[in-house]
Amino acid sequence: MTTVDREQRVLLAVLAHPDDESFGMGGTLALYAHRGVEVHLVCATRGEAGEVDPAHLKGYGSIAELREAELRCAAAHLGLSEVHFLGYRDSGMVGSADNQHPQALAAARLDEVATRVAHYIRKLRPQVILTFDPIGGYRHPDHIAIHKATVKAFHLAGDIEHRNGLLPHQPQKLYFHLIPRRFLRLAVFLLRLFGKNPSRWGENADIDLVSIVSQDFPVHAEIDYREVEQRKVAASACHASQGSGGNTRNPILGRVLNTFFGGRDVFMRAYPPPEPGFKKRERDLFSGIF
Image 1 (cartoon, one colour):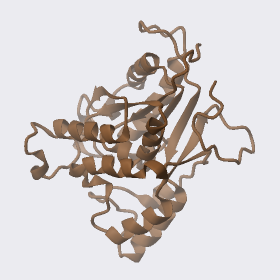
Image 2: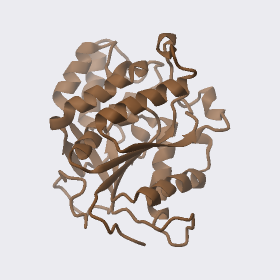
Image 3: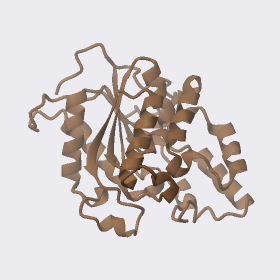
């Protein structure tokens, strides 16, 4: 295995769809780009299965073309160095017909996806890698698939027995982005208060927030990105076809949640595994990097 032998710091986020970067860990990505870190995004699909109002498609040949353009707009606001696509197709939510498409990410072999991710790890040589938590945030099959592939690729990239024409490279840290459980519990409470069913949330009523809240993960790092928060806001606005990250059906709910939980991202550190009894949260994902 090798370690990074250059001064430039590199962060790689591995996600599933256009908009995952902005609506999720966008504040953290913008913060590190602002600090001079070379920030890259590997996006597994072009979001073909997302629902789009026909008005947004004017001037675009397909949903994929539109959503790629939205992602590149967001990447510019976040300050990303480059966006890299794996070329898989959006699988849609659990049980949808898109799950069965031959190019669907969720249907692809884990080893195949991991090998593609490992290619970019070796090519870009990041010290830190970010991806989804083990349940993909809200159990989206593509989020779970890319989580598993990234974990496997994290180790595969440093394996000298794995040959792909690029030198082995072992990143030093791997983090999973988390949706704060306090946030979710408050969301469940407020949804019920507003007469909504938290077990059937989302545009298609296919997200079970109650079930998701029951899955808890430890928080090992907390990143305060308030100094660049407007960059995340601008990036989210690029994804107009996906509602720009706002809760248009419940604007009051959205404002309340943002007031209490905006400006910070939380992460679980998967590697190196925290020592037993680890309590103090890291405030810098590059802490301890050599």
